[in-house]
Length: 179
Image 1 (cartoon, rainbow, N blue to C red):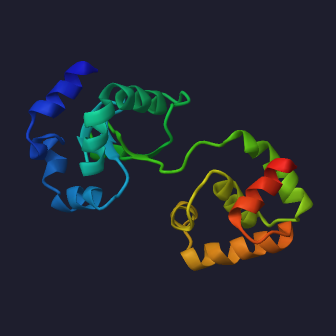
Image 2 (cartoon, rainbow, N blue to C red; image 1 turned 135 degrees about the vertical axis):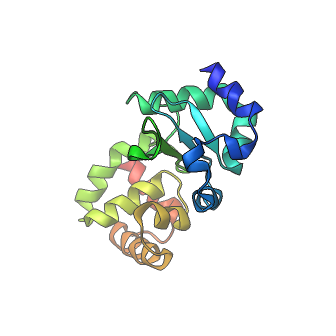
């Protein structure tokens, strides 16, 4: 593992990816547009390339990030929330794009989610929004996670507030924790 990390540090940015992939400037540009730390990793979790936020995270927590990526690739519960997207046959051998999920892990208040969904007669989408609110997600993060617009998140939040009989997020979470 250390060898692959050392190779990445020593190699100029353009040579970090396998030669066939490095020629695709659009791919590198797309990675640079992702605001979260993002890595191209091999099948074993070795880091082949990182966007700027990924490079910053590596500068601060290299060993922990590498260990977490290896755990995620091997299907073990990682200590960070990674979203892995297989690259198929693009990388020899196939690898992944790993994006660090900006949402915190579920808290101990998650036990109240099923009770809240049942008691308040929530739709599936409202339950998803409630879960993300309970995890501390912003409207923008909820919208990105669920693939909907922020205005739609606001609509779901308004319905949640009405069903729970509250008028703000803090009271909604407090009511959820009390269930």
